[in-house]
Image (cartoon, rainbow, N blue to C red; front, side):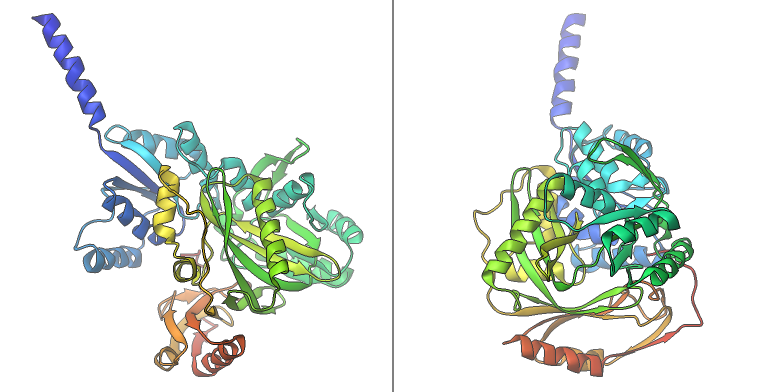
Length: 480
């Protein structure tokens, strides 16, 4: 009788394991709210959903509750939330082990996962996915994308057409690299975002002044949490390099030319350029570059030039080994024979209205695509046809930091015939940055019959919409 009991127990235990819930775990250390629709899609597919994230601010909790009430019939987005202030790989591994006590993890989804004091969170998540045999973006590739010096080093090692560059860790190395590269020279944080502290220097005096400014501004900046991500990683020659983003800057040759972004669908074995956004209006400020207006399909490039840009983007993605994502690759078509040049590879979807553009122009839903890529269920189409009608993204930025007191003219802007959608990322009453980086205060998605019509609509919007920001009220707050 004892033997029968043992056999029965073993059989039912195996049945329990076979019937265990399947789960998708969502992890991010910064942009948590952006994961909500992806988690909802995973729920609709039958997965349990778990979230590992910092404790939510009250405003974020309220926004999540409103989303669940209005769009999910009150259903919670996550079956369980694990709040944590620590994103080192051991902490994440422990939290995943706790989840695995009750469910089988079928996918790990990270929203952004930038550098922090605990390292590169996206790479930690990729490593944990690889340990479980799950699809990942490739942990090494995320370091090569997240660290702009390592990215250029990979390009050079793979023989890509790339500009000269160097790592400035002090004034001596700064001047040595600049002397070799030649002026004008561009300087930027090695893991910077939002065009933060992109500094152009035309001579040695400007270069020294800009480097000293950067060393002063990086600590205590809007992105100080990112710059706390001290890390070590080997270059392509196998030499282990140590990086302190707060104490160094990437130096590279300035690239004059027309700029684009290319949205790339990347699977395990395919790299598909989906869209080319033509950045027809860019402002290069003293400490930041503002991307004001982008048109899709591109209007300033021949088909041959577009093909060359797409080929360059594919080569760049393959050089770093990125997988299983929708990436945002920024390039310039360099003048004076430079040709297509990659500026950076963002291993995640671009900002502004890129998500809307993907859905409108090529029928790609980023939320569903991301979940399917990370659960190994995505099936790419043979081809992706681009809608021929011109559309555009416009961004109005904060002219400076301070207390965001008012925005006027939104209703009049929305009433313009070409305007399809607008979005206000920050509520009035919010302390914003904006002295050294892009801070988007209004996003506009529009369409038009010609580039000229779109430009004219953009000019009307600039005349209609105004912001009131009190620069005297600046709290040193991290990015939220």
